[in-house]
Image (cartoon, rainbow, N blue to C red):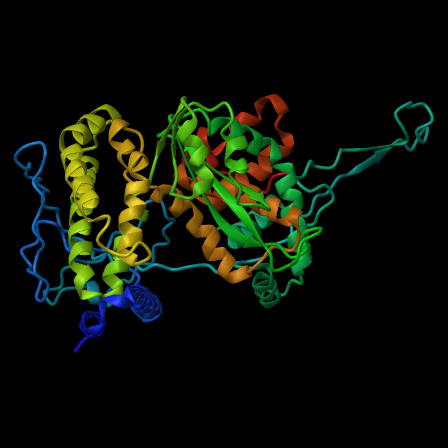
Length: 525
C-alpha cells in the first residue's frame, strides 16, 4: 500500500476531537511528498539526460502507461488544426570542403613507358580522377622585425639642421605601445580565452611547446590593455543596442576574488543585454557586484520598446513602465512542468504532460513561422489568430487546477508561476519582434558559462570588467556572422591608426567577412 493510501486510512480512523492532530499529520504528509519530489528531481538532475525535448504534438506514438487527461472546452469555438510541414532530409555522404580554402595540387601520374599502348600508339588523356583531403598547418611562431634606418649628415654633423643631427622614421603605432605582441598574437590569445574557453595557464603551456615563454600574467596584462584600448568601440555598441525594437536581458553569477570589502566566496554577476536591429544585433556584457534590478533600471533608462526577461523579481519595475512592453519567457514556464515530469509523481505527471502538450502547440506555431520567414507584422497576426486561442485554453486549465496541488509541490509551483507571470507570458502575441522565449540571451550567456567552468573566477573587478568588454566584442562579432579571430585582428590593427571620429567604421555591425581580409605582408602593427 502506498504512503498516500495509508495516510488517508489513518486520518479516517482518528476521532473527530483530534482535528488539530489531523491537520498536523496532513501537513507532514504534504511535506514528505514535497521532499520525495525534490529527491526524485535531484536524482534526475544528477543521472538523467538534461534535454527537455518532447515528442512532436502530431506524433502517432501513444503513451504506454499514462491515461490522457480530458481537455477543457475552448472558449473560442472549434480548435484549429496546426499543420507542420515535413522537412527535407540532408543528403548522406561527405560534405564538400569550402571553395575558399587554398588548394595544393599533387599529380599522381603513371610512368612514361606505361603511356604506350600495346599497339604502339601513345595513350591520350581522357580525364582525371580527383579526391580532396583536408590538411592543417599547426600554429607557427614568427618574429616581425621593425627596422628603422637612421640618417645623419657627415658633412656638418647636423649643426645646420634645426631638426636634429639624426633622422629616423617614427615607430609604428601599436595597440599596446612598446609591447611584444602584434595584433595577430593578441587576437589569437583573446580568441582562445574568450571564445574557446582556454585559460591563460593552458595557453602558457601551449606556447612553451612552441619554444616561447609567455607567462599567464603577461597575457592577462595584454587582455587588460587591449580591453581599455577598445573602450571607444564598446561605447558605440552601447548606443547601438538601444536602436532596435527589442532588448533581451539576463544575468549569471561570476566569482571575483579581490573585490574590496567583500569575501572571495561572495557572488557577483555578469549581466548580458542583447539588442540592436534584427539584421545587426548587439550583445553587451556588464560586470556588477549585485543582482539588483537597479542594474537593469540604469541600463534601460530612457529606452522605449520591448524588453524580454525571465520571471526574476528584479525585473518587476518594467511592468509599471508605460513606454515598455514587458515580455516573459515560455522556456522557463515549460521547464517547471518538465521538473514535475522528471520527478515522476504519477498523480501529477498527467497534469504536467497536459501542460507541456499545450506549450508544445505554441512552439509548433513558432517553428512554422520561422520556416516561412514571416516578418514581424505577419508573425503578430499569426499569433493573434492561432496562438491566442491556445493561451485561452491553457489559462482556463491553470485556473481550474490552481488550488488542487499543494502550493509548495512542483506542480503547484509550476501552475502558480504561470499564473503569476501570465501578463508577461502572453505579451509575446502582441508583438512580432520578440520570440516566444528568452533563449537568444541564454545562448549569449552560454559561452561565458562554458568559460567559467574552465577559468573558474576573475582575479579583480578590473579583470572582470575587461572580460565583459572582450566578451561583448566577440559575441557581437559572432552574432553578425564574423569570424572572431579575424575581427579582433582587424580591430586591433586598425584601431590605433583610426581617427576618433571614424571609429564607428570598426564596429562589428558595420563590417562584412570580406572586409576582414588583411594583406599577407606584415603591417606596421
